[in-house]
Amino acid sequence: MLANTVVKQSALPGILGSSSVLAPRGGERTKKTGSADLLLTALIDAFSILVIFLLMSFSSTGELLVVGKGQELPKAARADMLERFPLVKIDEGRYFVEEREVSSDGLVAELLSLREKWREMHPGEEFPGVLTIQADRRVKYEIMNSVVLASSQAGFSEIKFAVVMK
Image (tube, rainbow, N blue to C red; front, side, top):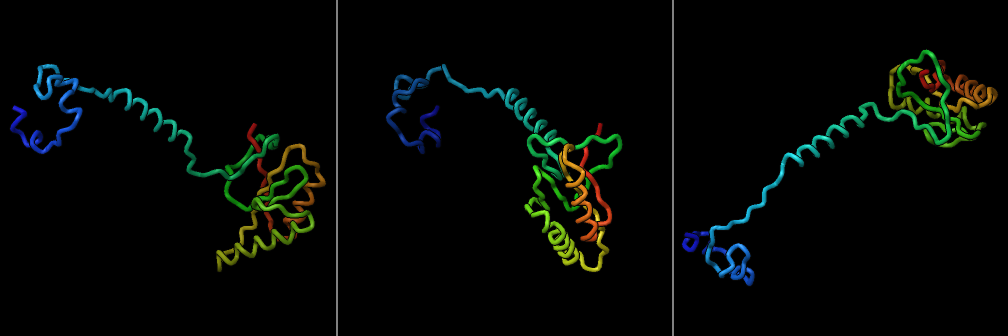
């Protein structure tokens, strides 16, 4: 039956072909045939778990704040949902404006340049003047006040603080 088929005629004979486990007598076909069954149920279960995990860990809003190790944000009883605005971060006495470290003297100049970049990218629109400050809850008032004063000098009229809900 297999001797006259197209597959048998087009297959290249090999060393293993004559001494196969399935046909041990060198080409004679016996009634025993081996078949490998795939257990698709286990694969589908594993795939489903992977898809559910990826969907649950996906965030469509993206990360707006990266809280450093050992940093605790202040707790608040009432807070709004965090939106994407320019960010000033205070970490261990250092100031960061949009992840770039600046000195305390250059804070106003950096905020002014940030405001000018916004105006170049949004011509004809009114500048919203909103700034988010992220700092540890143990930061002293004098340091926070210097950031608030620098932001008001740069033209940011609304200041929001990054907090954690109680």
